[in-house]
Length: 155
Image (tube, rainbow, N blue to C red; front, side):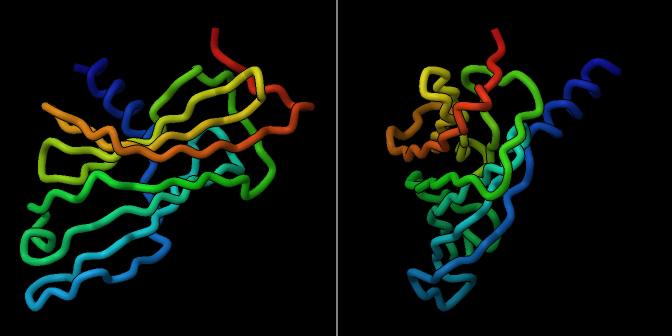
């Protein structure tokens, strides 16, 4: 039981919450919140100085207000260096750095970091998946790291 609890705490600590930057209304709803495009900031938990900005649709109305709506799969990502880049330790070649539920049960928005060691670049991919069938819609961005500081990669 202690191992399961420790694993759950470790897993939860690797996923940070998004910080809301802003939103714009796209469709007026008489009852419940309007449909929106929201922009959130996600700081990479293992790479200080890199923040990813994700824009995505958020369904409003009654279902949206109750948390029963399924948000669209489309999302866009732009990751930028926002301060000195400090990498906490060797990074896996590919790792999910953020995940957020975008439907009641089955759909998630994900951000995955990939290391392009040859170019000393961090590549970030956002996409959504569903238990049965995911979506091929995705967005990618990259942050080049100064070649004087090679990205440590887990072997």
